[in-house]
Structures are given as structure tokens and as C-alpha cells.
Length: 442
Image (cartoon, rainbow, N blue to C red):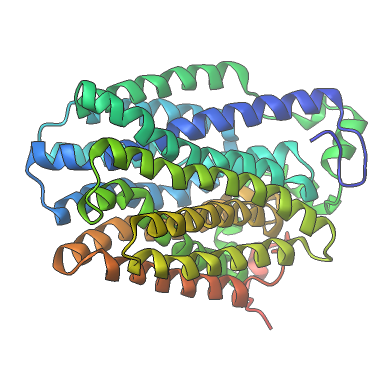
């Protein structure tokens, strides 16, 4: 992070801001996914305590994703208009209170409500992170920081079974929600006290030149203007937007099959104990952590050597998604627990690499004034898939087994990869929204 694509040294004040921003995004991202993963780790304990079926547990696991997905559309506009500092800070407070409230759940209905509110509160996390990266890093250097904040996702999920299984076994599942909720509330205070959005009028010429490296200056200047509804709506006139929305649906669907059901799958279908499944479920997500970090660095390397930043990052997404599909098939069919876990580890490694590349693609494909908006639209599509995955997986497993549930996820991810490949061809330009027509790839 010390040099720009052109070899220009990063100004010291910019470097400090980058370090602070990425550190806080990493910490808040880990808490974000610890909170999401708590329900998956406590799956069997909650089902036994509340008397829930596999289908009801699927609904509970998906309740978060529906509200999270629907909130992506307004959140994308808000982060482009008011900035990530306040939006993410308020979101941290809301989701932490909802997480702690989940620990007090005694009925299915109450629990569903807390998960819906959790989804609303967590919605600003990744659009805000994408905006932070676009604010503080030049265009061709955004893959590495994007990989870093995306790496928080699998790290949080990997830590969840390791930490929370012990807490649940020694106390109860209720305390797992209360403790993680309290941790998030503390992080919200630190974020609001420490992080600041950039103010370009207060920067030196050297600092502005560093941040504008590789950028179209006319577009960068327009980014400072107020985003209108017409500007946001115009994004849907481009095939690039639809390719990212549909493609991320497939990527997140398959990822969330594992994210929400892996601990329960290992105990139910693979007959592992709570303690053993906690360790086994952590290993694939540590692989995912490495995948996100490597993907960010590698996508920067490829993009700097390619003629198109969009094509380089898109191709990385497609390759990793095809790998997810290829390794899910033996993961579903293998009789050996060891082989299945190895394949699942590869899938989650690739899934998080794909996610990191997808978010860095958003910073390359979007016009500067609508980076948060395009990232949020992509994430909206992704978490429609994330909302559907746990419900469909639960009911398919209840009616048949986990094998067709996993193969269904592989098929949906394949369709998503093809959407990225066919529809995402070039960046969306800054332009006047009233001239909009539907732009599909030639």
C-alpha cells in the first residue's frame, strides 16, 4: 500500500488514513460475520430448545438475508450521498442491539424479528467498505484493500465455531448472541470516534494527484456532486449492472449454503459431535480468509497488466466461480468426511476469492459518483441468493438429503458465472441520466 500503480510514493497522511480505515473495516467485518455465524453454530441447540424443524430453521437462517438484501438498494444511495462514516456507525449500533436481543429469544416469531433487524443494521457494511476503498485508494490499487476487508468475512465465520462452540457448551446459546452483540457495540464507538471520510478541499495537490491516478478526471469531478434518483436508476440501463446482480446471486447462493448450513450439515449428515464439528467447520473458512487476501493482491497484479480493469477483475470472478462449481460436486458425493472437507475448503477458498474480486470489480465498473450504488445493487442480487439458499437447502435436505441441495447450489453458481462472463464487458460511464437507453454487450 506504499506505492501507487505508477510507482508514486503514497503521501504519509493518506497512508495513515488507509491503515486506520482498513483496520477498522477488518474488525467490524469480523464482528459482522461472527454475528451472522452465531445462528449457524448454535443451530442444533436452538432447534432443540425451541422445537424447530429443519424447514423452520431454514426460514430463521434466511430471515437476515431478506432484509439485508432489500436494504442494499437504499443503502447504496445513502453511502454515496452522506458517506460511510455515519452510515456504517449507525448500522453497527443497530445490528449489535439486534444481535444481543437474539439472545433473549424464547419464540420462533421473536427470533425471526431480531434476525430481520440484524439484516437492516448490517446492510451498510460492504457498500460502505467499497466506498471507503474508492475514497482512499487509486483505481488500479483497489484489489488488495478490497481483498483485506472481504477477508474479514471468512475470518469471522472461521472464528465463530471455534469461539462460540466453547461458549455455548459452557453456558448456553443465549450468551453467544449477547457477548457478540456487546462486542459490536464497542466497535461502533471506536469507528465513529476514529474514522473520517476524506475532504478533498483540505488535501494537498500531491494527495489529490495520488488518489486520482488512473482515473478519468471529468468523472472524478462529477463524483463530488449530489447523487440523484435518476443517476441511480440509470445504472439499470446497463448490461454490466445486470450481469453483476445475477452473477453475484449465484456466487452468494452457493457460499451461503455452506455459511449457514455447514456446522449443522457436519453434525446431521456427517454425524460429527458439537466440538469436532466446530473445529472442522472452522478449517474451510480459514481457507476462505486466505483466498480473499490472495484474490485481492492477484486481481491488482492482473489488472495493472491488462488493458481493461473491468475485464481483468471480471475474468478473475468467472474463474473462481467455475472452481466453486467443480469442487462442490465431489464435496456432495464423497463418502469420506476428509475428502468432503478438503473439497469444501477449496470451495470456500474460491468463494471468498470470488467475493473479493466482485467487490473490486464494482469499484472498477462503476462511475465514481455511483460506486456505492453499483456495489449495493450487486450485493442486493447476491443476498437474494443468500436469502434463498438456507431456505431451499433446509427444505431439500428435509425432503431428500443434503446431496441434491449442494448440487442445486452448484448449478445456480454456474449460471451466475455465465452472467458475469456474458454481460459484464465494459465500465459504466458518467453521463446525463435523461439520455439513458438499455446498453447490452455487443
